[in-house]
Length: 500
Image (cartoon, rainbow, N blue to C red; front, side, top):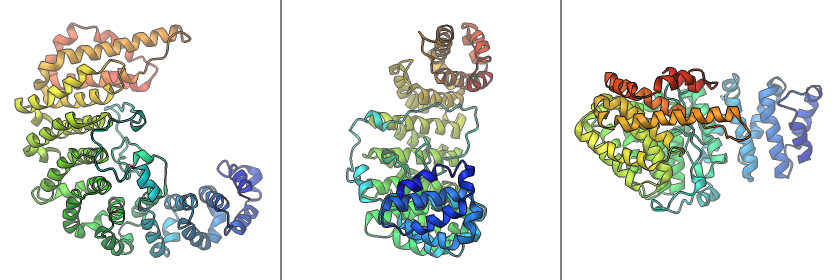
């Protein structure tokens, strides 16, 4: 039964004619299997209904009330794989125009089910080493570090951070970034569904959520409390207007939660607070911004690596929102970020570069003071000297330096010559390797052109920051010849960075 449904499921998305001719009979037979005692059968029935929602909504509409009731049951299935497949239904439905009409009568039942699915399962906690509170001294293993790709600063980034995972971004802002269990699970799917539904229903969701939140946020069990903080973050975008009256009470409570004894509570609190950063910054700075910044900086130096990561990402979001509001606190901020260099393992160092680059973008020329330059540049140059030309860790460091060079302007002059020279060398090396590969593809590997793109972007940052001071460097190098070649490269990102 399970295999039969799985086989037919292969033909749904492609709208295969043979299946479309018998679609009503297929749906009828799915309903007949709906209560099957075998979890695999139930899972494949749910999967079929989710795909049909995208492809043949018209055929499901007459049965929609009973399908919603069924999916509500299955989202609470004892078997987590079944529950996960069923939970996908809410995510898919939220993207359909009829979502509001179909679900408005079911919110009172659906919201508690989704919220309940947002708790860590026992398995999650084991996989996340949720009982390990201090791990800052343990070096990262290779699989801890996801491959990192350069994102050109000249390309407008779609505003993400906040589309809920699958694990990101990089991003700095994924919905609750549990990257060590990077596989999609019920917690993430429930949180994603709640986020999307909050964007559909807006403040109409709040009467169903607020009573639950009150109970969760002050719950004595950390797993329950943690899920409440995740709920609060998930609804931030969609329900912001309706949440504003509650934020003067909630934000101080969350700032307190940053000191919770459980690392997983501290890390999710960083993320949730970052989702409300825009509101925090709109209030008088002493009320929320200063206490939030103070506590987040402590968490950047946390003894738990997951908390360090979440705090660093949250702080980068706060920097983007606060911009020059942070200028009075620059010495304190730089002190913390520079100290983190000596504390962080490999993976979090890459996130630290991003936080420093974002700070430079946010405060601009205010960073150009001798005492700030003295604090910031030595650790960056030390990393710069350690890294080899073929090390991909250069990407985030060069991106960071690009922002720093633009912000420091003439303050970057003492460092500009070696930085400029290395960028030119990276471009030259990559072009030479590309020529060899084009001539003899069997003998020579294709180069990673990201090295060239990131070097061109840093040269662009230098030119912007140094202005006329860069003329001497240009005169003594073959950069114009190299750029002429880059402007004709097959790869659009290379052409874009060379024009920039």
